[in-house]
Length: 457
Ligand code: TYD
Ligand code: MG
Image (cartoon, rainbow, N blue to C red; front, side):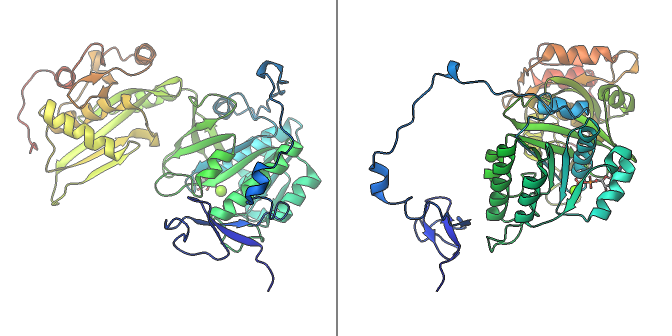
């Protein structure tokens, strides 16, 4: 019988078996076996105890100061928001993973970036394993003439993709997507843990050898994690998350890992008919669009190192359900539970038997503790039916983290948040240095008028 070309290795204990089983017979863990290509070159030399103790050639440690610094000249795409998030452009030979939900605009962004680089005279290649060349052309037509100049291949086979990269040696390449390329060495389906790891690993080796900057497009699961193994995130140099809601126009791009820059940067884009457009003055737009009705407040948020004003809205309505609904968009659902509990206990604003809906307007996702107070004030304003406005009828701005004992905790960059609010004419800002407690903050926001609580539990 021929030897199997692959083995199944337990990701918990390293136990190997020729066939997949649900439970590892080595350590007893469930669903930990991952198919791997059997390494032919080192067969037999890997596990023998003798090979470990054998005196092989030792490596010579080098003082870091004596290590030659690599030349990290960046490939600037010219899409400012993208370059910023990358830390100043693409690094040759690096792997950048762009994750996002279907339809968010990953293919659009990568096509635009490649088109810009191509028009600056760099050699490029677009590998599509999801769409046919004709479909890519349709998209490119919307993006302008430079996009139509891009060389593309529509290919799902890893061997062909690698051979094309070897032959073409582009300076920049897009793989759209890493989950749809398959290696015929493995019997598991495209997108499985083993496949994604094999594909990413093989592409990385070619990229490092020929100093190709690779943009890997990756899918995101319903929970928001990158589909496929965590190893993918470990393997690449940079992980970018493209977020927002498909039906809305605003999208944010942020780095969750960056070996060549900070992970503090975020970019805001708008999807238009002719592709993604950078939103340079997002605060101004969100403030202008703010409703000033009960249930609305402006959050002075930080998107990375940049302040951003966004509107947070809440609706609280009597529920017909045994277990009332808690629906959020752009904010963490568990965090909403904490905010509601703190509001009920420490500010006497209860929503026990009411449905609560919270929405960060414009499809923006806010993922920072400073958003707590905005959610709390929007809910309080909705419950009491009081519109939150500052002097001159301008929207009220706020930020701060809610502590479980009812205190308002300070968050980073308070001065920059306040400055951003002032810049757009929001002089009333409720924040931790002025209001040390949640109760005080809610009272200051609502005014001290004691109104009947229509929906309190
Ligand atoms: P796409 O980039 O294909 O998303 P992904 O690769 O992340 O799945 O496109 C996302 C959506 O954007 C698609 O529904 C069509 C729309 N779109 C525009 O509104 N304007 C455009 O110029 C383009 C190219 C796409
Ligand atoms: Mg796509």
